[in-house]
Image (spheres, rainbow, N blue to C red):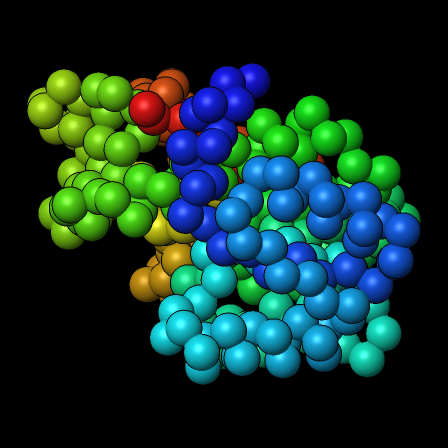
Length: 247
């Protein structure tokens, strides 16, 4: 772990951390304070939503990152994320959950969470994955051409022209592959359910029965065609782009 690089990516990122367990909140809050310049904590979903709206009212901007527990009193993580996405659909959200709360995560996949971690937290993995998310936020903030997604140092995706370029040479994609790439790179790291991807790719195929096998075939072909696209399967939940850190 390059902590100098981590500090570079996190130095301007503001975080809202929402957790109802006092001991765990204190423990993770101290870690987050060592990483980020500004961390606000909330004790439950209702408190988190209040602080989210207050922050925007006082600064005219949203938090860069939200880290939230899923099972909380007054307003749980699902209700909180639903409310926040109504305010800001582009908000980046990371969810914390216990291992026995897997069923609660499925609605959040459809809402578009960025990442989830199971408790007890493996802090080494947590910081590594957090670095990837912060790298994305950092590059989004400084990117001059917001239409260009940097997949690696030689591979880019043009969101406007829908072109995948390797060393500035276009990779030929089918119509369905273009839709898949455009969808999955729209929010790097967001988990898309198979049903959501199928609905997007076959949106005009009203007379064709499609299932997960059709989606898997497209993903398999795309992985062979462009291995560095980093389409990752999250077991039981869906797929996401897991792009490397670009310095």
